[in-house]
Length: 193
Image (cartoon, rainbow, N blue to C red; front, side):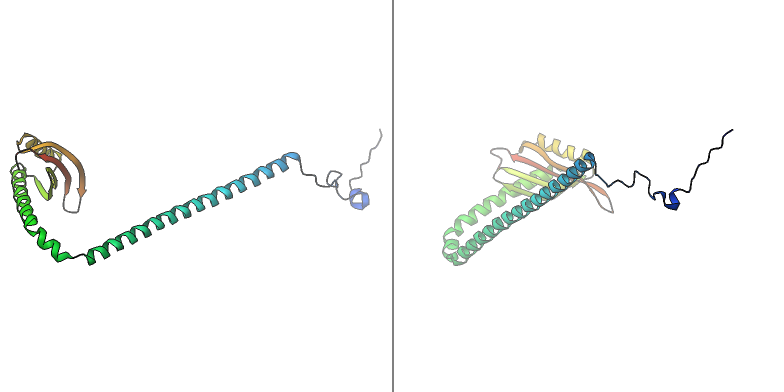
């Protein structure tokens, strides 16, 4: 039988120090270089788009500011014109026509208000009514959708109104109750004014 001896302490006594693999200088691999270039490219692209977005927002804000400045100057010019006009002459010249027109419009509005109130169900309330030419706009509140539908049906059946349309119907919730807010638009029938 032969004896074999292995010297495990040869490295510590001066046989080398580092393993042969660690003694080689560091050489970055090709994939590491490509990955770092891609990473740098993404960062550059991000910075470019970020600064472009900031520049676009700044340009938009400057355009809005310019438009508002122009609108303010236009309004100031109009205000100066209104102040310098000879208001007394115009009011005196147009006073009879204006009062006649107001009387006529007032009578028409009273007729419209009367016709709307006659067709208003008990579970609905009017908060605003306006008329321009033959178009009437009614804003109000109702207990539920059924009350709004009942109001629309009565307006449709009335000979006083045409083209009745529900423009808005939305839920309004407050601490006391939940109501429906509505806006109705319709035309006054020709010859009814």
